[in-house]
Amino acid sequence: MTQIEYDHAHKCIIVNPTEPPHDEDFELWSTLFLHSDEITINEYSGGADRHQLRFSYQQHTF
Image 1 (cartoon, helix red, strand yellow):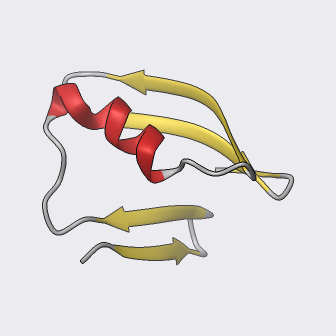
Image 2: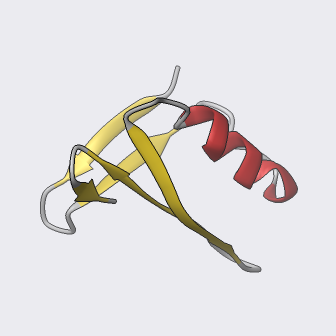
């Protein structure tokens, strides 16, 4: 089961899946996970040790 938490100190959402996606699948996984008419994906960046997806929801950027 995937856990979703909001980290108030860092103002970010933390998604903890039971089985994380492989590096080459992360962009697709995050797009499918955040598929909603209310969410706008703004930017994806990936590197050797991190993946980051910036999106907007209810006039807030994450």
